[in-house]
Image (cartoon, rainbow, N blue to C red; front, side):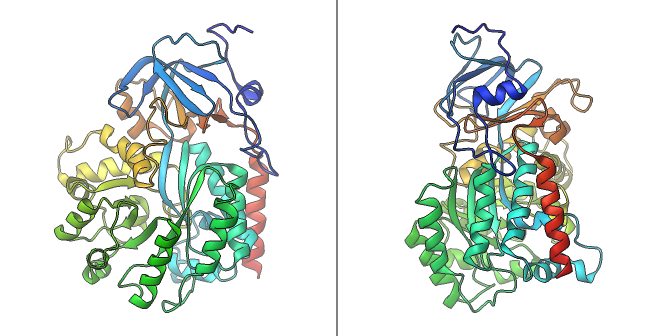
Length: 461
């Protein structure tokens, strides 16, 4: 059947034509076939200098892959009207403790609710289903925001059942990303992470293809936080399994004085698939070591301010040449998973600390949330830009909303004016997950009620 250029996909029709996802809260993302379609007439911000920006562009997608980006593509396929929209790669969040979304905005009201105290008090009581509900709520919020790839830094895996429950949320909601296996809250600094269970998770979940858009990592503990009898075997085990390692390092002044990153470099533990989180307090030599090793840094400016680590020196860090990305971190502390606000804050901190309005352009900040973030997770050849041959992870942002109009500079609009409420469409791996501002085949009320009941039960234990 020949479809005219004006064929428009939306709502339930779009769900059926493009495929979606089903479960108790969402359909199984892997259950439906990839389909072919074309996004037409959008202002394309590709984040690929070879493709460039196209003010009236089309994006052809087939079998979950971007086939072509151009003007007025002649394709016999269903068409999705992108007029009045900015099309860009899906956002990539490089560090998020998804399970703590169950404790949204609970931190920092008293000594008992200080972030780390709250995590330990609630973490030691958390059942597997609590991790499931926290992660599921976070993943749904991520989708709604326009995040298509997320790094789940899971640091309360108290048992194999906890790990399985956390991963079940990923399987149901179906974002791309990394699942980093970490120690549970309250775990002794002298004890290893459960290396046997990491191997089991890799074998059963990842080698078995249960979560095809995820890859496995280790949420590690660096030198200075634990001794060599712990950090070395954990690191070596990760290398033996062929998985990347991520560390919170040099987050505070005290950690900077310990020189966690210096010690990682001395131990030959900085590699292109090593990720460092926060890293606010680093020496010039440490930044050079990160840059030369190809390791990356994920900053979380909102959480770094709210927990009292300090003001993130975005410009100083970026000027050092390190690969930089942005992240939400934890909603118990920051409240919202809207990564757009992190772009806005990062831009402001960069310029404010430089005392110079033109210190950085918003296109550079967008890179940190798209192609650079994807590269930092080892996915730069897969997503992060609207490049033919890459997987089709993209979002459409409305240009004519009260909060975005009028649009004169698309990069500025995206980095400074956009929020989750302006995200019209989200596509992950070629599958429609949000259209016309509504999540496709996800029962939001059920997700929210499940999280609320889980938290009430946990607090009553």
